[in-house]
Image (cartoon, rainbow, N blue to C red; front, top):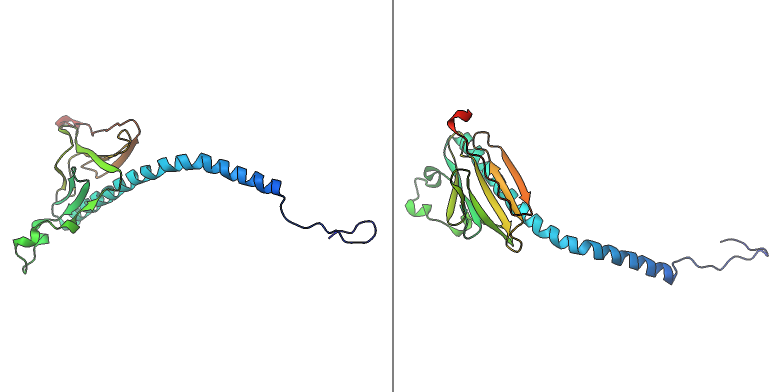
Length: 194
Protein backbone atom coordinates (compact mmCIF):
# COMPACT_ATOMS: atom_id res chain seq x y z
CA UNK A 1 0.00 0.00 0.00
CA UNK A 2 1.24 3.43 -0.85
CA UNK A 3 0.65 6.61 1.00
CA UNK A 4 -0.88 9.65 -0.54
CA UNK A 5 0.06 13.15 0.26
CA UNK A 6 -1.76 13.30 3.67
CA UNK A 7 -0.46 10.07 5.12
CA UNK A 8 -3.55 7.96 4.42
CA UNK A 9 -3.22 4.52 2.82
CA UNK A 10 -4.57 3.89 -0.70
CA UNK A 11 -7.70 1.75 -0.93
CA UNK A 12 -7.05 0.32 -4.46
CA UNK A 13 -7.91 -3.40 -4.47
CA UNK A 14 -5.77 -5.95 -6.40
CA UNK A 15 -7.26 -8.07 -9.21
CA UNK A 16 -8.28 -8.00 -12.87
CA UNK A 17 -10.69 -5.70 -14.57
CA UNK A 18 -13.53 -7.05 -16.69
CA UNK A 19 -11.79 -5.77 -19.82
CA UNK A 20 -8.63 -7.75 -18.99
CA UNK A 21 -10.69 -10.92 -18.38
CA UNK A 22 -12.59 -10.52 -21.66
CA UNK A 23 -9.35 -9.97 -23.60
CA UNK A 24 -7.82 -13.10 -22.05
CA UNK A 25 -10.89 -15.21 -22.84
CA UNK A 26 -10.90 -13.91 -26.41
CA UNK A 27 -7.25 -14.90 -26.91
CA UNK A 28 -7.85 -18.38 -25.43
CA UNK A 29 -10.90 -18.79 -27.69
CA UNK A 30 -8.87 -17.91 -30.78
CA UNK A 31 -6.18 -20.44 -29.81
CA UNK A 32 -8.82 -23.18 -29.44
CA UNK A 33 -10.27 -22.23 -32.84
CA UNK A 34 -6.83 -22.73 -34.41
CA UNK A 35 -5.86 -25.93 -32.56
CA UNK A 36 -9.06 -27.99 -32.52
CA UNK A 37 -9.45 -28.53 -36.30
CA UNK A 38 -5.79 -29.63 -36.52
CA UNK A 39 -6.13 -31.87 -33.46
CA UNK A 40 -8.84 -33.87 -35.24
CA UNK A 41 -6.38 -34.63 -38.05
CA UNK A 42 -3.59 -35.66 -35.67
CA UNK A 43 -5.50 -38.39 -33.81
CA UNK A 44 -6.25 -40.59 -36.88
CA UNK A 45 -2.66 -40.16 -38.07
CA UNK A 46 -1.43 -41.32 -34.69
CA UNK A 47 -3.70 -44.38 -34.95
CA UNK A 48 -2.23 -45.19 -38.36
CA UNK A 49 1.35 -44.86 -37.09
CA UNK A 50 0.50 -46.76 -33.89
CA UNK A 51 -0.90 -49.76 -35.75
CA UNK A 52 2.09 -49.76 -38.07
CA UNK A 53 4.56 -49.53 -35.20
CA UNK A 54 2.95 -52.51 -33.45
CA UNK A 55 3.20 -54.62 -36.62
CA UNK A 56 6.80 -53.50 -37.10
CA UNK A 57 7.66 -54.53 -33.52
CA UNK A 58 6.01 -57.94 -34.07
CA UNK A 59 8.04 -58.47 -37.26
CA UNK A 60 11.28 -57.51 -35.54
CA UNK A 61 10.49 -59.88 -32.65
CA UNK A 62 9.69 -62.76 -35.03
CA UNK A 63 12.97 -62.18 -36.93
CA UNK A 64 14.92 -62.12 -33.68
CA UNK A 65 13.26 -65.33 -32.42
CA UNK A 66 13.92 -67.09 -35.72
CA UNK A 67 17.64 -66.31 -35.41
CA UNK A 68 17.84 -67.19 -31.70
CA UNK A 69 15.92 -70.46 -31.93
CA UNK A 70 17.14 -71.44 -35.40
CA UNK A 71 13.52 -72.10 -36.48
CA UNK A 72 11.15 -70.64 -39.03
CA UNK A 73 8.84 -67.97 -37.61
CA UNK A 74 6.07 -66.05 -39.36
CA UNK A 75 3.73 -63.14 -38.88
CA UNK A 76 0.37 -63.75 -40.55
CA UNK A 77 -1.71 -60.79 -41.71
CA UNK A 78 -5.46 -61.13 -42.22
CA UNK A 79 -5.95 -58.44 -44.86
CA UNK A 80 -9.75 -58.80 -44.86
CA UNK A 81 -10.36 -58.52 -41.11
CA UNK A 82 -7.58 -56.05 -40.23
CA UNK A 83 -5.66 -58.24 -37.80
CA UNK A 84 -2.37 -60.12 -37.44
CA UNK A 85 -0.76 -62.83 -35.34
CA UNK A 86 2.56 -64.48 -34.67
CA UNK A 87 2.82 -68.03 -36.02
CA UNK A 88 5.16 -70.32 -34.09
CA UNK A 89 6.64 -73.52 -35.56
CA UNK A 90 4.30 -76.50 -34.97
CA UNK A 91 6.80 -78.30 -32.75
CA UNK A 92 6.91 -75.29 -30.45
CA UNK A 93 3.13 -74.95 -30.19
CA UNK A 94 2.50 -78.62 -29.41
CA UNK A 95 3.76 -80.27 -26.23
CA UNK A 96 3.75 -83.96 -25.34
CA UNK A 97 0.55 -83.64 -23.30
CA UNK A 98 -1.45 -81.99 -26.09
CA UNK A 99 -2.96 -83.39 -29.25
CA UNK A 100 -3.31 -81.67 -32.62
CA UNK A 101 -6.55 -79.96 -31.57
CA UNK A 102 -4.34 -77.63 -29.51
CA UNK A 103 -3.03 -76.20 -32.80
CA UNK A 104 -6.50 -74.95 -33.75
CA UNK A 105 -6.85 -71.21 -34.10
CA UNK A 106 -7.91 -69.35 -30.97
CA UNK A 107 -9.46 -65.88 -31.16
CA UNK A 108 -6.98 -64.51 -28.60
CA UNK A 109 -4.06 -65.24 -30.97
CA UNK A 110 -4.94 -62.24 -33.14
CA UNK A 111 -4.16 -58.54 -32.60
CA UNK A 112 -6.29 -55.98 -34.39
CA UNK A 113 -5.61 -52.71 -36.14
CA UNK A 114 -6.74 -49.47 -34.54
CA UNK A 115 -10.07 -47.85 -35.38
CA UNK A 116 -10.23 -46.23 -38.84
CA UNK A 117 -7.16 -48.22 -40.02
CA UNK A 118 -7.14 -51.06 -42.55
CA UNK A 119 -4.65 -53.02 -44.64
CA UNK A 120 -4.24 -51.58 -48.13
CA UNK A 121 -2.11 -54.57 -49.10
CA UNK A 122 1.02 -56.59 -48.50
CA UNK A 123 3.48 -58.01 -50.98
CA UNK A 124 6.75 -57.64 -52.84
CA UNK A 125 8.08 -55.91 -55.93
CA UNK A 126 7.74 -58.99 -58.12
CA UNK A 127 4.21 -60.24 -57.27
CA UNK A 128 2.74 -56.86 -56.31
CA UNK A 129 0.40 -56.16 -53.43
CA UNK A 130 -2.11 -58.74 -52.23
CA UNK A 131 -5.20 -56.96 -50.99
CA UNK A 132 -7.35 -59.84 -49.75
CA UNK A 133 -6.92 -63.04 -47.80
CA UNK A 134 -4.06 -64.10 -45.56
CA UNK A 135 -0.50 -62.97 -46.15
CA UNK A 136 2.52 -64.38 -44.32
CA UNK A 137 5.86 -62.76 -43.70
CA UNK A 138 8.08 -65.81 -43.08
CA UNK A 139 11.55 -65.65 -41.53
CA UNK A 140 13.85 -68.62 -42.05
CA UNK A 141 16.07 -70.08 -39.33
CA UNK A 142 18.69 -67.37 -40.02
CA UNK A 143 16.17 -64.52 -39.73
CA UNK A 144 16.07 -63.81 -43.47
CA UNK A 145 12.94 -63.12 -45.51
CA UNK A 146 12.04 -61.74 -48.92
CA UNK A 147 11.98 -57.97 -49.48
CA UNK A 148 8.36 -56.98 -48.90
CA UNK A 149 6.01 -54.16 -47.99
CA UNK A 150 2.97 -53.86 -45.74
CA UNK A 151 0.67 -50.92 -46.46
CA UNK A 152 -1.90 -49.48 -44.05
CA UNK A 153 -4.41 -46.76 -44.84
CA UNK A 154 -7.12 -44.78 -43.11
CA UNK A 155 -10.65 -45.93 -43.94
CA UNK A 156 -12.02 -42.40 -43.76
CA UNK A 157 -9.21 -40.96 -45.90
CA UNK A 158 -7.81 -43.67 -48.24
CA UNK A 159 -5.10 -41.39 -49.63
CA UNK A 160 -3.41 -41.33 -46.22
CA UNK A 161 -1.12 -44.39 -46.24
CA UNK A 162 1.66 -45.77 -44.06
CA UNK A 163 4.07 -48.30 -45.60
CA UNK A 164 6.55 -50.58 -43.86
CA UNK A 165 9.22 -51.97 -46.19
CA UNK A 166 11.30 -54.87 -44.87
CA UNK A 167 14.65 -55.62 -46.48
CA UNK A 168 14.96 -59.39 -46.16
CA UNK A 169 18.71 -59.95 -45.88
CA UNK A 170 19.54 -57.09 -43.54
CA UNK A 171 16.28 -57.10 -41.60
CA UNK A 172 16.18 -53.33 -41.94
CA UNK A 173 12.65 -51.91 -41.80
CA UNK A 174 11.85 -48.49 -43.23
CA UNK A 175 8.59 -46.59 -42.95
CA UNK A 176 7.05 -44.20 -45.43
CA UNK A 177 3.96 -42.06 -44.81
CA UNK A 178 2.03 -40.47 -47.66
CA UNK A 179 -1.04 -38.29 -47.96
CA UNK A 180 -1.27 -38.94 -51.71
CA UNK A 181 -1.97 -42.68 -51.57
CA UNK A 182 1.54 -43.79 -52.53
CA UNK A 183 2.32 -47.46 -51.83
CA UNK A 184 6.04 -48.01 -52.42
CA UNK A 185 7.21 -51.58 -53.06
CA UNK A 186 10.75 -52.92 -52.73
CA UNK A 187 12.74 -53.14 -55.95
CA UNK A 188 13.08 -56.49 -57.62
CA UNK A 189 16.67 -57.65 -57.14
CA UNK A 190 18.11 -59.99 -59.75
CA UNK A 191 21.00 -62.42 -59.40
CA UNK A 192 23.55 -60.00 -60.82
CA UNK A 193 22.86 -57.43 -58.10
CA UNK A 194 25.03 -59.33 -55.63
